[in-house]
Length: 512
Ligand code: SF4
Ligand code: SF4
Image (cartoon, rainbow, N blue to C red; front, side, top):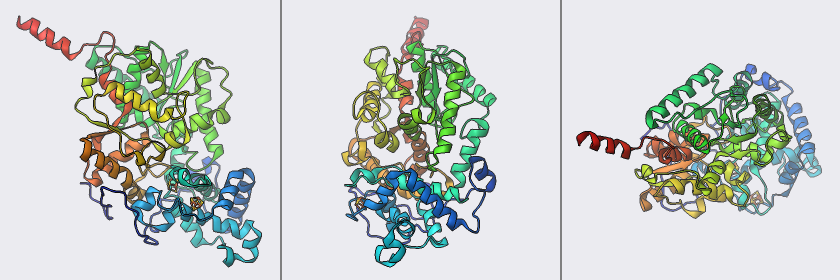
């Protein structure tokens, strides 16, 4: 079991609503971004003396721009329905991690400066000045929200705390108090093309290495091309897919599927990143600039289609906003969705009977599936409602014999966050990550005990990294997490592939 310098929550068989512990997570706060990572993103380097005036002005600008923000701040009736729905509250017991508690951090400032009652009778309406103490609370608790939207599913008014937390982060960035992890990563995308700072030659080397590995393993020359002009498909995938485990096994799977489909494809060294952390910091401008890189790569490489790899929030940005951020996409082939998810792509081929599988290659695992928040609650797949739940499951079931869902209350649109989304996947937030993972790990533990599940499949790079890191805190193994296309890769039988049966026949022939 991984060692923690905090108390790891105990897993229970039944979900428990904990008694509140005010201030339990007040100490949790990520590192603040240095000026050199703030400025390239268009933000002030650090907090100025008159930060309060700037913050209120920025808030006013946003209230004018985003009508939803004002509606969310005005319409809460304190019904309490959201209070026990956030994984961070369940895991930490801190009332400021109740969605309504988190919203109130902004609501009290909004009331003080933007409502008549708050200006004249602040105490009566819970309005408060935007003091340094309040700002520190914002910084702490708006970085304890993974923007997963689970609370909004249960709010009778549809109040989306994720949007409030994005707005809060945008205001803080606007006054020079951005988060180191997200802002450093965005700066790397601008400079090098991906979150991990992997330069073009290293990318080329990595993909050539994969080609050799796959050919050694299967005897088939599957290509993993970079910057191939005129390819039909541009694959935009999280950079973790290029080397992290189990992500890279998913990338191997995408390549095998493209190979069997007989389509040409490429990744771009210029836009070698599907992730878009502009969304986490609530910055439309940064989200737009990152998305524009994909447009430029698609035009430069003269592709006809764009397919996204396994990444939850990238799929949200792509599915929900790509057209606004970087469209129109009228130069792409109109017969295909723009963009398309790799699970949709694979599932279509499965439905058409174009892929051959040996499901027994996954018989060493009993699988369950984690619905990633951004995919589940902010996107769709395919042409039917609920496609984002059914299509990944259909792919898994096509390639595995042993599959069980976790408890219904914890999957599909009610899925629990992995605990590391929304820009929280950083070591300086390990405590909140481990505690926030509790409800998801609890449901996983139950299905392990009841059904003998051994592995958790996911289609999000952040979920995979987060689970690999936090499962050991709960006494589980980091390699219990797998990519969905890793399962596809294990089971797919490539045309001309040397199989174990061929080897056995050969050995039998030699013996004869
Ligand atoms: S969006 Fe998710 S993390 Fe944020 S308050 Fe709601 S449930 Fe919690
Ligand atoms: S469920 Fe909605 S209306 Fe009710 S307390 Fe929560 S945010 Fe407010």
